[in-house]
Image (cartoon, rainbow over all chains, first blue to last red; front, side, top):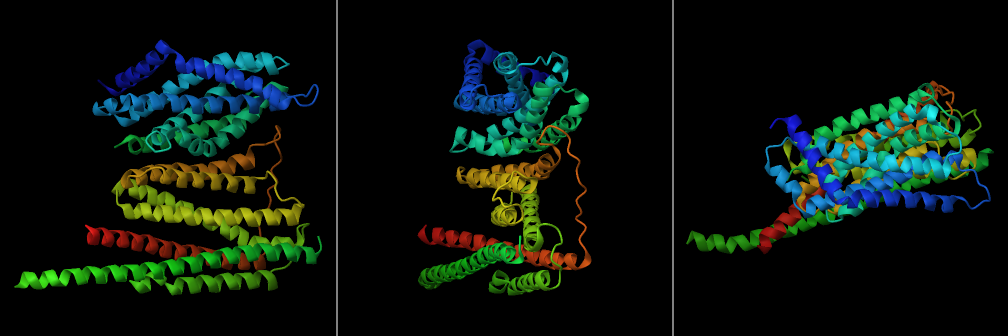
Length: 228
Length: 59
Length: 227
């Protein structure tokens, strides 16, 4: 079985398993929606407070915390059911496993975002940003890739420690702050004032660079993260 | 900000730096001597335990 | 073995440079003409400490790669000794940075690039320590720590860049090409302090490494005696 076929197989396995039971995705979606409600109550202390310039931040905080839950859940499951051990016994290139897991996590995140973004728009966004949907999606995807790549690498490590899921946020959050800076800035700009790719160029290029650098770094180190 | 006020802050900053570094230096120096003493004691102990066996073996 | 451990020459050298730098900073370099005035003098130690911290993390990075390649634990030792020292220096950067901030802008904290970057650096390498503390097996701990040290160090310049150039307000700010241009006399004091700090890092690293090796030796001896 060559690398590409293995990659597809692993991604399919993860997706099918999750879509069959749907517990992780349903929980994450509920979490994200609940978080939005909580944000409203957390911030609307002043009568008629204008949250327009907080929207990017709220959205990305929600996604990042949802991702922490999701990563912990999926890797804990793998560890408890010894799926990873089984996978390691096969002659699969470790890097293929990394890419497959990252893509799997990315797909989950995108599914959740597909539900969350419209609801978020309903709750918090006044002006229509349909004209800027393309830049918005580009920023979304680029930030997602960064979060998923680093998240997958670090979840693999943290699952094999004593702290397990408690460790992942501590490792991941400091690393992900640059993504947060770029993504929230871009998203808020789109929501609050409308922005085309030209206005967002710096941030988009930054996210692109971030993804490229850390995909390569995770690529190079995943062998060690997963190895026994 | 006048020079007098500025001096207070600058002095505080340098004082903290030097204090931390000096304390770290002395703490690590003490650690080194303590460990070296431990190693010495343990090595002596090891030698002491070995010699009777060595003599017994020589016979 | 004893000589190597105390390496007095390095410490004395460091001390000489640092004290010289300090004296030059106060008696040779001019008082800053900008609004910061006298408080700018903090710069002469603050920046060298910051750069030395980054050098320490860089050493940890290289040592981490070396460990992953050779699986020799001595590289792991160098790595975490360097991270510990880097963390110590980073905390000093934060403290002096805050004092400088209070002196220059009359506030103890500001979400400005330097302070926030070092804050994140502190969190990053504190995470390194937490990671080490929750893995019991030696080789695995070293491996995970090495992977994280590598990722963390790559993240440092990226964070610098993000906090500095991605505008927090939404609109592009004109980046004032603020000079690192120092006039000659300032540069001399700065440079001498820089050498001093770097020598200090090297001296402390060697000593800390020696401590770790000694600790190991003690454990070995204890086990061979007990066993």
